[in-house]
Image (cartoon, rainbow, N blue to C red; front, side, top):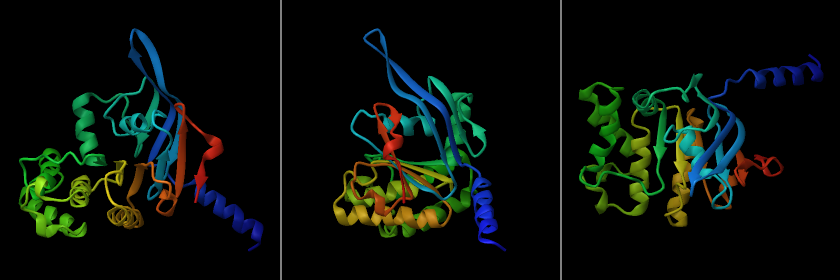
Length: 246
């Protein structure tokens, strides 16, 4: 077969890869002091299964707003969000909560573990909400996930007894509870020292190799070591001149 044919087959193959996340003409505005403030405008973005994408930009560029829209925490003013072939923009709040629990794992910047529940109970809670796994298997799955992130020996402790790095690992285990295809992390290493930050980003890399799609908002300058693509936001728009595919 000729080189030309090989290249054509490679192009056709890449074009056939389905998008896990597809954003079309996405915009978001807020009312402030009686006037409308546009935070995001005309965002078009496709993310494929198993891809690791970093969203970067200066404070106020719209990074957190964008991931809040992708996760359904906030709703767009215009445009569409399609994840795994499902448009989420028309879902009711109840339907959206159920859908989000099964399809998206969220790692919050400040962990947001429930302080009165043990670490294991924090992991079980999303499973109880979505009924993805039989009740009699949830405790064991929680322990397996905590072992995966290296803190199984802390399962019966309250979050306050853990270090910041350990709480971040617990938050990742909780995000994985229902085995979602997409993980979205807001500044996953922002509160960690360099050693713990490297461990967390390596864990994301391992998860991507297993097929999880990772979207991370980050201010870290060396994030390029751990992602496949960097999307830069500037004044609420994708800065096409700064996009990097690694």
